[in-house]
Image (tube, rainbow, N blue to C red; front, side, top):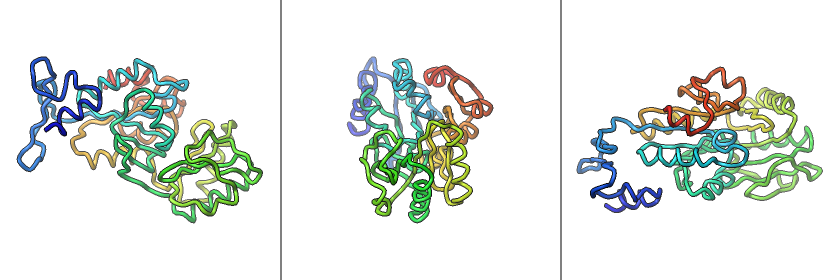
Length: 299
């Protein structure tokens, strides 16, 4: 019983109001039959006919000016305490985002990583992966090496490495998997995403268009000064759909994001955008908000 009641409540720091049946606690109950199939859920004494799931982009949406605001953090915690799910959908890999959440003392219920190429549970256990075919990934990297000296970030299933240019240079931020030299390119395997970074926004947009034309097996997203390359068909919206299909208790989903890689899920799930969002995605939004806290309040 502790494994399904007090322990989870304690893990999310909600054991002051959840996890046990006694006066003063929230009347949150899950009723199952003898086969442990779900019958119904009560939230604060009222039957909950379906779970809400909020999906948020990270950079420039929840993580603004290199910080998660206190108001947004508290809003997410209250959202989760009310029995709802909170999901992060990001272009980052797990190793570059999970430590940030750990420093703030909370976590999403699921991670959609590498623009939907990977999905993980709260603890980081992989639930879904779609790799770029190895020969395609290596061909893309060889081509990128020939363009300029930006170098590439390469997200593998377990880490992100920085691939230096032929001249030994890179514009990538620090990678949790360290740095490799150009002559080590052919050793790479299990590639889920390739990253390029350049402060020339037009260069990134043109590069992503060029990559998709040259390599039909991949999709390329231009997100400000970052170009993210994934297997064809990978999209945050597809990852959200995967969660809905595999967790049928989710009844209602809404998403929030600010950039081109969020466009699919904003279109598909009555999406909101922060007021700093790209004009292209603002046109598709059902709501423009100042913060994730406001988005959750109006869910």
